[in-house]
Image (cartoon, rainbow, N blue to C red; front, side, top):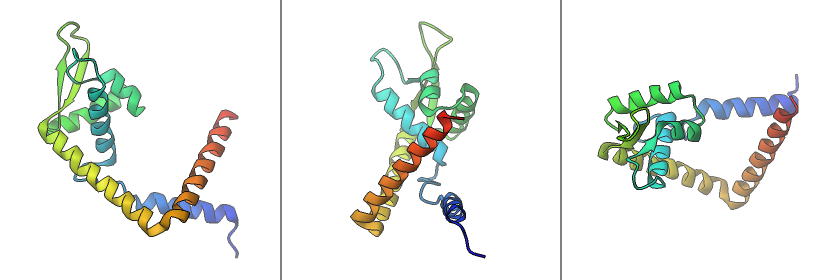
Length: 151
């Protein structure tokens, strides 16, 4: 029995999802941990001078996770010694997350591996195929966004 185009697409997407080695683990942290560390770093860098880290509420919005899910992730990162949490001095309801020295080192290691994988992928694909893949991924994203808007 011949596969339909839909079957081939589903199989290819499933195969890509199964491999996921290009994103996990990254320098000893999971993809979710890497993204969280990266966002804490990024948000802290752009924070007000008076703030000591990233507000948990801002982090939750940035990573598009619920506060309980972010809290659970931060618990894990805190146990690993990669972040620390602090209460704001002016409002004890506000909690900040900040990378520790170990967290910065882990992020740098993961960031290196992340870029290494993508450099290798681009090199193997070549410029033309990479450009075509980017075009197709963007087109697929636009189609799925359109479908979600109409459901």
